[in-house]
Image 1 (cartoon, rainbow, N blue to C red):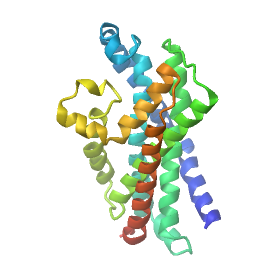
Image 2: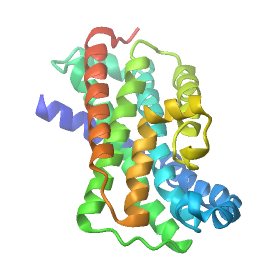
Image 3: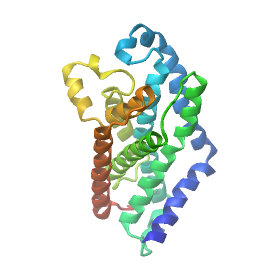
Amino acid sequence: MRSQLWGLYAREVLRTFRNPFVLLITVVQPFMWLAFFGSGFAQYAKDLASVYGTSNYIEFLLPGVLSTSMLSVGMFGSMSTIQDKRFGFMKRILITPTSKEVIFLSKALGSATRGLIQIPIMVAAATAFGVTLAISPLGWAIWVLALLCTAIGFSSLFLAITARSTDWQTPGVVSNFITMPLMFSSAALYPSSGFPEWMKVISTYNPISYTATLGRDLVLHGQIDPLAFGVLALFAGLMLTLGYVVSARWLRVE
């Protein structure tokens, strides 16, 4: 099982580097958030520094953009699954001793790894925009693990939802349905203190809020939020379990 998992996982990661277009989009898209969204709202952070916790909006935005990037990586994992089904690779794998659970785990971990590629690019971009990151090695490790938990959680969720599908459009539809409400009801792009009460309730249970808050505490204050990390670890564990069970029962080729 270990060698099968490693082989399929390596294939998922290599597919990213073999496709220049996918790799370019993976790197450029979050950078564009910093450049355009960050610059567009920069003045608001200066005027409301007491609300944002900083006068540099890009400093506030960096953890949020990384968090929402981990949300979107799941779509690529589910698209990869559907591609494998449509072109016959999944059928060839399933006639070997490789289990459906191993296929699911390789897809989830591969998608999460693809998301982590964005971290050094985003940090370099933020530094170019004048953000200073005085974070300890332990802080960096916790932040990366938190982002990994978020990516694994959402990758598992997307894969569970699309396990039975062979339709190319399904991942995009699911992504649009999930991504927008989770992104805008979180603390990723702006403080949740200004939300109406019903959005505050959603934000309280939104994993993206915890990922953004954990990263922001590290960027702005150099502090680690153990509660946020615990919630994200629990989220990853629950979604992995859900995806594992759903894939074992419902993953199919046709």
